[in-house]
Length: 84
Image (cartoon, rainbow, N blue to C red; front, side):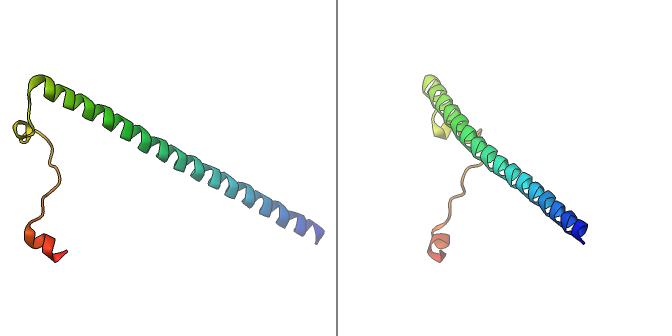
């Protein structure tokens, strides 16, 4: 009987160890995702600054670039706005 209790307690400690490992991994994943978001935001800002600088340098306007840029936000009609 005593050996059974030791076995149960060792299983419990093994589970606790696995749970703490999983929790540590999840915490690391969350931290990495946060770092990724920050890095992407920083990169986006630098890229936008470069695009603005090049547009100024070459005299491009938004209207001139409209056909070459990716699809942006879709404008809603007045009817769609009134439904919201």
